[in-house]
Image 1 (tube, rainbow, N blue to C red):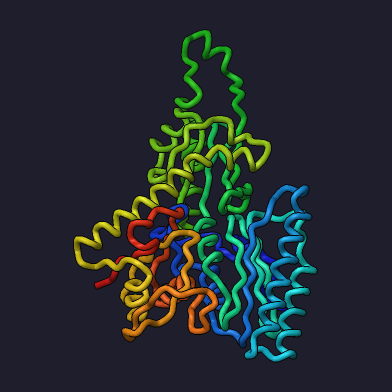
Image 2: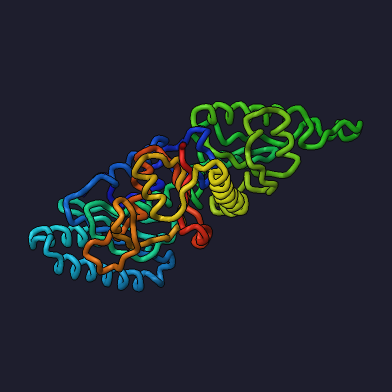
Length: 396
């Protein structure tokens, strides 16, 4: 058992990515957080056989029995494969199957998320519940299949949400689709809206609107100062929600939220549940994800013009081996089985039962480019169908 066992990927993400990588749903690089070091550890070679079991799961309790049956079938497939593999001794087969049984015993499928990854190798096992749907797969190799975790880490990149109102300004820690209120950085800020002199001011026509009086302006200045201090040490993408007048005032009194995504939705500063905040910013986060895909595609177009482009699994594999890839763009669930062709260094399609086949070439490419400091952007299936489902921007 390892210290990584059964923890969601978001739980090993440090609370702040550098500002240069602060965009929501942005690419993951191996130099930016503890998550990257965890993924690097998972990518290291294992003693054969290293087994990866990947399956979609259901959040509804009523579907947990279905998930358990599916998992049982996948483990039977592992047993069959290991038993038929002459390279796997009986002792190692029993070790790995025992590790898988131990991993399953620790699962609570009644509280499953959207996906599950199990890793088992001689002497170790790990379980990774994911807030992200994954395809069903079993892989037996000398490394673990990490691409699903890389994609989940990119999608769960942490961000801040600031909910503002005239009497309460709160900070929320966002990771993927989940947010939790943060009370460790000077937030929430609260004040009373009762003005003891309001009746006299109203008689003489001197009662300003809520977002124009000096007390409210000072309240927002205090929030801006606290936010600036936070972003200077824990820079992330920032979403600010509130009435339009509140958003305008916050921008006018300071600079900390100037580059934030403004979401004109009132009432969230007093939200009774984190889910309400998450739902309120969900459309803005979806737009950010779309922008990431659009930026990646635009980068590929620019690379074509500059002769810094590679498309398709064979070309990308060639460039990955030289360390020339700056950004890899790959469809979420693209998988292809290949083998080395007659021409040295080139790949050709192969059948899954080909003894010389490489079954996880896409995962191998992802691992390879991450090791050289490249960015990896996952895009929806079909986005790159015209260029072989994966493409890359080269450094030179």
